[in-house]
Length: 240
Image 1 (cartoon, helix red, strand yellow):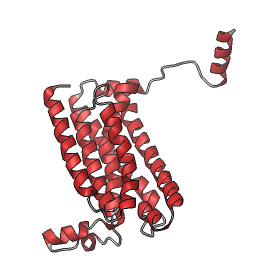
Image 2 (tube, one colour; image 1 turned 90 degrees about the vertical axis):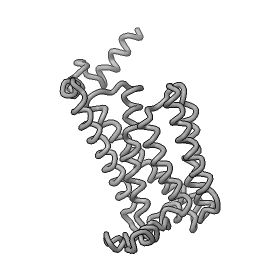
Image 3 (tube, rainbow, N blue to C red; image 1 turned 60 degrees about the vertical axis):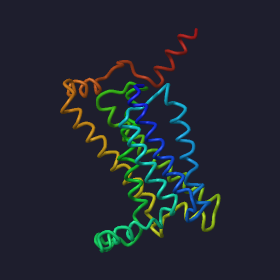
Image 4 (cartoon, rainbow, N blue to C red; image 1 turned 180 degrees about the vertical axis):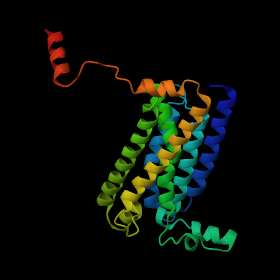
């Protein structure tokens, strides 16, 4: 890793540490703040542990930092009570909710959308560099993983809410009375990831000379032999 990139990552880390420390002071609900930060602790620890063996690009680290920063704001206030409408009114004199006809606090929707928009590219970098995906699959699989992990997170939210129960469980779940909350959250995360992958594809289309060939090659059949029972039979023959 170059010294310039290393200095940039140190700067990002320091900024996030300051943000985290500031927003950790007197959160609206300390128990909910702790629940919201459990995954952050694990994720940041993973990034630190892999910084030398598997360093990401500056773009990916920046996108991850933006997402984690938004998440920390939500964990400080609880997602359902982030006062973005008050902030907007303070600077513009008008209500953002009234302007768009919002009937609920939509900060959680923003963060779910940002999950797909900001993290699909780092996920793509992982697929390309580890699984060596190319062409169509280098855009589809990050979208697919973003969608599946978004679904998984909704299941985790449901499980945690059931486990802790009461007001804490409802604060963590943050449905705000919307029975379709989980579906909308997953839909927005998927939309964000789709936009991110379309933008990435457009950039590559403009800059990558063999873009069309790579896309075509990625959709060609590589293994002519079927799998399933035929593959099991071949493995059994090889063991004899």
